[in-house]
Image 1: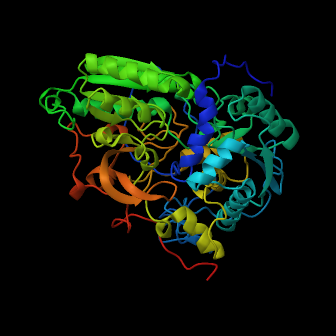
Image 2 (image 1 turned 90 degrees about the vertical axis):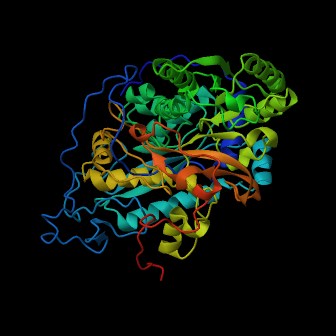
Image 3 (image 1 turned 180 degrees about the horizontal axis):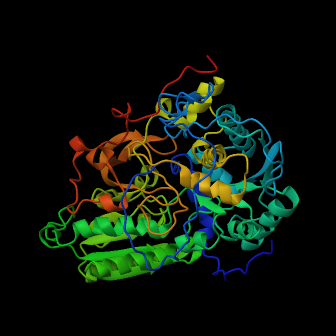
Length: 562
């Protein structure tokens, strides 16, 4: 397959140099965006290309009421539940055990016995290593590869693989994680030298790796890029499968929540005069074409305008830490001059440090509405912001209510299988691509191709939303317009409690935590209430689940490791 024409790339910004550090700090906490679905969603999106609806018929025989007693489902099936018998909330439906000919080489990277998978490992620099070690989230590349292999062994012991096993080939990044040239060269190596069917991960600060793989018919799974727009992935379907929602999908959640705030007094402001006035909105947003952030900002503005919501100040920015304090001073002055009561922030997790410090210096105490972009909704970073400002912070997050390690099912499945925990502390990130891959493989059948991989994920059944898990779907479930190739569908509401004590996303004990409003209730795009739920109410909020809520959490089974 010939590579497609490449889109122009914007100049490298300062963010590229800092993102490896930022992502490394929060990697343990953020994004295990895994599988589930329900109904709801907007019916129109004029910016999204109109995709043809692929057929999801065919595939292996799955358990149903009609065939429950007529098929020998085998020891890996919980016949009563109808799913694979593992302690994982997202266990797929049972399929009829396979026997016979799997048709051999059904796709590049696939033989009768193996599926070649590239495991991309970015190469951290010295400064990044020091930063990660100080944060307690450092992890050796050797341990990370070993942990991915642990997940491969787990899934292959329980999911149907149709006579094939994964051959994992480590591919180390040849350059900076933000380098288009290195990303493109590494993708060509994966496609032509490794001859892989798919890549687990990629250099998340460039689109070039995923773009080149897709052009060559190789799948890019999990965290193969930081984020993307729907358009970028739609144009390269069915070859890119990210765990995070599209940035323009996130903008839908943001606008729904702001709509519930509009027309009401800024009651959570730290200025008594503001609490009596109707909200005046200002927007501070990260503005770069990379990963679709600029497009998301524009769509968010358009959605607000379409809903009759005025934005008094729109302050797009590019991250330049050398000028961050100067930029913050100018931004705060603009917001204050325009009498903004409510600052909406959609940006990186470093900039609020400068904005909140400057706001206090200028005696300006608005509401801060975090829109959950780029890990600005983590307690790890929240503790670094000006305390006088951040106690007035609340907003939208795609993260779910955390649980202690003893309840974490992504650690538990390895402990359950082997008697020992995952080797790498970054297991929550490392499980993403294997979980997506094996779910698709299990439901695809023996004829494995990018097209049957797509149809398998579209075939994954819908389910409910739960406070302790993210809700993920693919395909057509009346959640998003068009064809959904992304992961997370739902979001929740958070508010900052400066007095709450707990463990942050990398295991550090401290004071100051995000509280999840209304018991961590999550909303699909069509489910947002017209009136904002009660915030800043400890009695109805939660920082962590010490036990799963009734009906939530994974099933239990006897451990193979005894």
